[in-house]
Image (cartoon, helix red, strand yellow):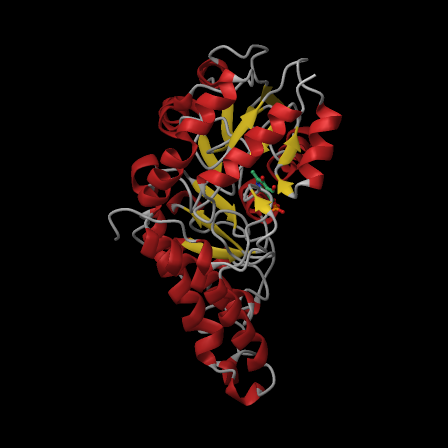
Length: 388
Ligand SMILES: Cc1ncc(COP(=O)(O)O)c(C=O)c1O
């Protein structure tokens, strides 16, 4: 693992004339991942070259790399899924939710981690407890975390939360939430889409029951690929669909119509149909390999140093930003007061090709190792110019 990361922009093909501070929307593709994807695409030219390796080993290697990234001892507890909604669907299908019980989520979560719980709660006459963000800018992250812990009670069956809030980067204390859920024997599922790859998440330490993540943001992967981790509580669970490849001895193509009652081991029954995607899998693998070679801790250090001074400067010019202990440097929200003209700001950003997102009440800034201090300086200048 390198001691200190330098800017990694040369590994990407980002156009020179844009300032991309929007990894939380969509990551750019690594050059190495692009090459791997092209090879995967070209493989279909000669279908005779598509072998058992591509159906099985390629995915097993990817599971192993993801297991390393997340400190998961058993790669077979990780499955390939197309989207977070798919992973949440698996949890919902296996949750024995009864009338009067509840599910706890944070306010304004990403819809893939909301709609499933709305319909499950409704179907079972149960309650969906949505814990809103406190209506204050002082100690907002701390108070929000406290409110979530307070909402968990003896009727709670599940807490479905992300590691960092997608709209403004608020960090949720997964360890504390895990302790609270354990106290009441409730499950905890984590949506890692806005954190895995950029913020360390140690599954052995946190011990979530399930963890789901789309790959196209901080895992630098392709769109339409993600991972789900399911612990032993999901052993013997019911999958969302009955994919042929998830059954015992599916490696034996000649014998597939000797239908099997047994599944592949551990969580592999949950994998989605078509999971051996020959184009997406090599892209995803190249991306995870690169993240492992950088080291997530080193990414954090790089980004902390990158945003340190800019955050102070932004506060100086009147922007409202969460306390540093309650956001991760890869994703933070800037709240602008009446002193700024939002329409003017959006026009300046557009004109100067500076890419951020506007989500809820915050302007979301999400840098990565391809960014340099000059990128943040440009953003600060744009915000300053939008002062009324
Ligand atoms: C927190 C979070 N979860 C999930 C997703 C994507 O969901 P899905 O994989 O279901 O498309 C996003 C996309 O912005 C997100 O921010």
